[in-house]
Image (cartoon, rainbow, N blue to C red; front, top):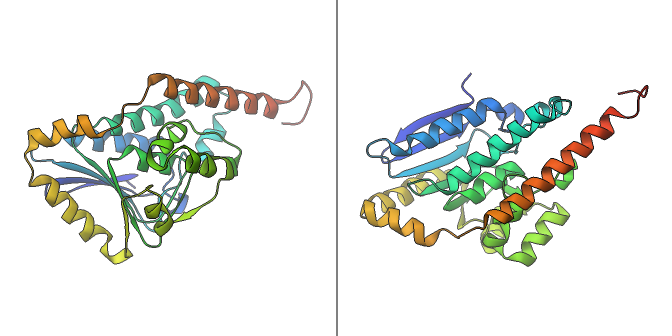
Length: 247
């Protein structure tokens, strides 16, 4: 099974994460598929990149099963997490506009993928939240960096420290997504949005991206990453326990 299905729809290159049984969580195969999708931004005629998911989830975030399995190998765990982090940053710097077609639940790293995109449109049934705290984690793919830019610092702190979930309408009202549409209208709505983008002058669009995208200091990304590395290292140490203790 292909973890990410990449298809061309007119001027857009779509990526659909296809792990519905795992909430479309990002394991190594998904990250590789999204990297290939992102590389397609340079293909002739591609004027936008669209990211969505299969079934009831957009993306549940980093795959906890893979990450937990790597707790005993900290360099490998850091490499896995950093790969996702670098992917999110690359989406935020893509040479064409990026659109999140949020078909369902977007939590943790899934929210961070959404935040990396230039435009996010949510289906009415979608539910969104950071929710790292719900699984005893802290963000590493950009929530602490990008969320305040999307909804403002006060609402970002609320979402980060409560782990609460917003409906699609709440997310649209608070600026986390540009709009919420009926589930059946999500793909046609995004198609129309892409058509509008494709009708504009290509060079002007690329230059507009440079103006419209927020400037984010590397120090903010570094602070988040250092916090995550310290957190998972402490988790690994606690899991190992003292000599002779049960694992």
